[in-house]
Length: 456
Image (cartoon, rainbow, N blue to C red; front, side, top):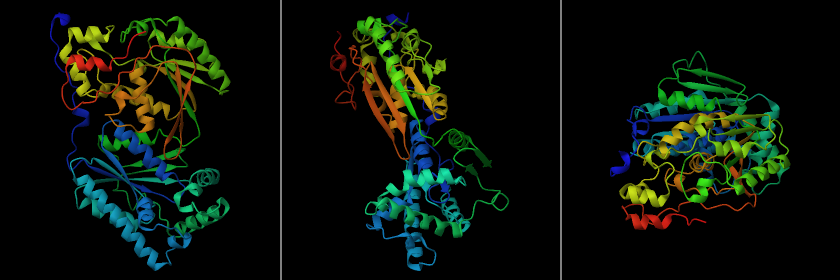
C-alpha cells in the first residue's frame, strides 16, 4: 500500500515549459497610434506568458527614450520634419531592438515584446529583417481604435499622467499629447491585408469589439492570439477570497471536503454583508466543487453562482486529509524535498503548483472578460490567481500569504493591478507556511517542520 512505502520526490514534467529552440523564439511587435492601449496589451501579455511558464520580457522604446532624454520638451520631438529627432528616434529604436535580440539569443529569453508605435510599413519591414536574420519568429499585434470616447478615456487616465508630463499641468499635457498623436497620424500606415498577407498578425479593433487574425501558426502564436481575444480594458474590480475556516483547518489538516467551522459560518455571513455594501450590479459568484466554498457563498445575493471544477484545491494525493506532522512522519524525505522545489513538486498521486496553473488557465481567460465577480476558492488556487494579477514569479507564487477571512479586491489598471486586502474581523487559524531560509539544499524534516504554523 502507498502508506507503507517511502515516497520519493515527484517533480511535475516540463513538457509544456521546455526550453525554446531558436526556431520557436518569438518577437511580438506592437503596432498602433498613441493612446490605443499598446502598453496595456504588452504588459498583460507578458504577465500571462510568464505566469504559464514562458520567459517573456517587454522592451518599451518609450522607456529607452526617457533613459536617454532626461527632460521631455514638447510634441515637436515626434514631428517627421524634425530631422535631428527622427535620427535620434531611429537610434533609440535600434538600441532597444538590439537588446531584445541579444536577450532572445541568450538561454533565458523565449518571447520578447517590442512595445512601440511602429506605424510605418518601412519600420515594420526593418524589424522583420532584423529578426529574421537571427532566426526569430515575428507576430504583429495592431491596435486600431476609432472610438473617440475610448481614445479620450485612455488619454485622460493614462497618458497625461506619464513621466513625460510630470512637470506640466494636465490641460497643457493634454494639448501636447493630442499634437503628438497628430504627428503620428500623418504617417500612419495600417498593416495591409493584401500587401502583408504573408505576415503573421492580429488586428484588434476598438479594444476588443472585433478581431482579424492572419497566418497564426503554431502553439505559441495561437495561445497569444487566444489570450488577446479575451482581455478587456474596461474598469472592473475582481473580488477574491478563500472559503471560511473549516473543521479540518482547525485540526491542522490539508485538503479534504470539510464543513465550515462556527467561525467559518460567521465569516460567510459577514462576507455576504460586505458584498452587499459594495453595491455591485449583476454580481456573479464562482466557487469550487468543495462544500466549504459552496457553504461560504450561500448567504450572498447575486445574479448567478457558478461551480468550477478548475477552482478545486491543489490535489494533495496520498497526503489529502493529513496534518503536516503526519506527512512528516510518513514521508519525511518528501516533506523536506517539497520545500526545495515547491512550484514543481507534485504530491504522490496528486498535483503540483505547475499543474494547478495549467488547470486555472481557462479561469483566467474567463476572469479577463468579467466585470463584477467574486471568486471563493482555496489557498493554493488563490495564490496562483494572485500571482497572475500581481505578476509574481514561480518562486514567489507558492509563498504568497492568503489568510482566511480576508477579501482581496483586485482592480486592474493600464500597467499594474491594485490589490486591496480587506479583513472581515473574524478570527481564524493560520494556514500559511513560511518560505524556508534555505531552499537551495535539502533540509532535514526537523528543519522543515519549523515553517509549519502553530495550531490553535
